[in-house]
Image (tube, rainbow, N blue to C red; front, side, top):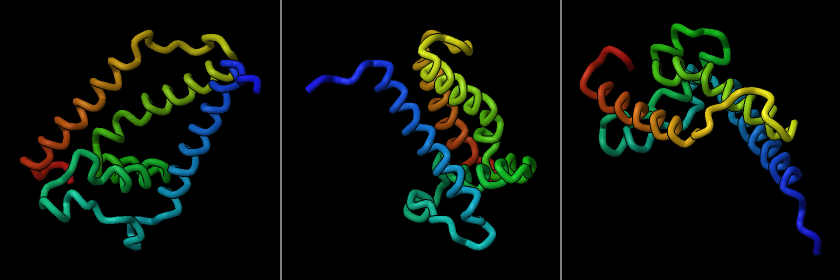
Length: 134
């Protein structure tokens, strides 16, 4: 049995990731939060505090339906970083399909992921002590 080439595997993984991303966006846009069709947060129900991602689904719904004020109200961190995340997804996809670097990306991308997660955790902690954001 012949193993697939590395570019083929990268392209297949990119297609799978883009399909998952598109499916997540479709779910968020179809599931209207005003009709209580979204799943309740298990962490919030159990511990009675907001997890770092509480409100992100509602924020994504309002972001993708172009109501940015409401999106910012429900999850300011997600809304503020959505353009950066969108660019990263597009740049990785284009670079993987082209097989070379077309759009610039940082060399050490894992550092940005760690900073993003640390910021998300800090945002989640701060929002539990203040009632300014959700």
